[in-house]
Length: 249
Image 1 (cartoon, rainbow, N blue to C red):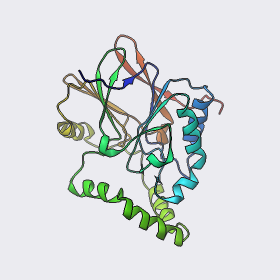
Image 2 (cartoon, rainbow, N blue to C red; image 1 turned 90 degrees about the vertical axis):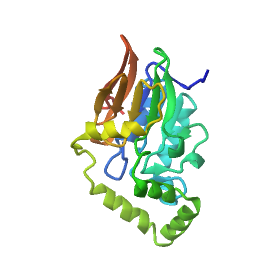
Image 3 (cartoon, helix red, strand yellow; image 1 turned 60 degrees about the vertical axis):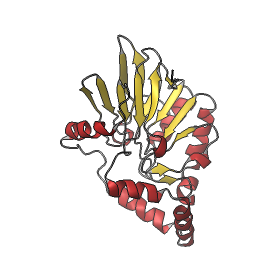
């Protein structure tokens, strides 16, 4: 019988903080976790926690040093799973205690402890078209990242700053029309496990759908509404949405 890691009662999920020069709410959230103003025994970071953080590129690593140090401290006290996204990847060299889940290992299967239900967790960008998949593979190439980092450092981090500037122009809180149909098509790409839940970030839609016996949850973007989600077991399973607002951090 296969044994899966457990999602515990009161586990917290947070997705798509897109931390940048314009946003620092994710840092305040981590401070609240570290000080136990927000209490949990597990923290699931569902990807794109930063607008631009690549473990092999100096710019983001230096810029978000205090975040990385704080996450490492938190991970010595509670379980922290970090699902890499399309804005934050190649992170395994940055942590000792944070459990990094790269795109190659996504979706990762977990069991909800109280109900024994099987869940598939991923950032949400795993299944795309050929061009997307090729780009995803290419941009994580160690040799390419080494070259890009060398060039970036030589021109005063001009490449990273240009990417950041372009990303800040995006409307990350927009509604995706026909989202349910898009997800219904995508679910066919998941392996035929006996899944009860699929949990994703990436799309920023804050939607929950039921397809037969399968529950699909797309978490909202923390960057858009400073929301995170707590797992509660009462008459079943509930991912209760909470707001950072109200904590004196």
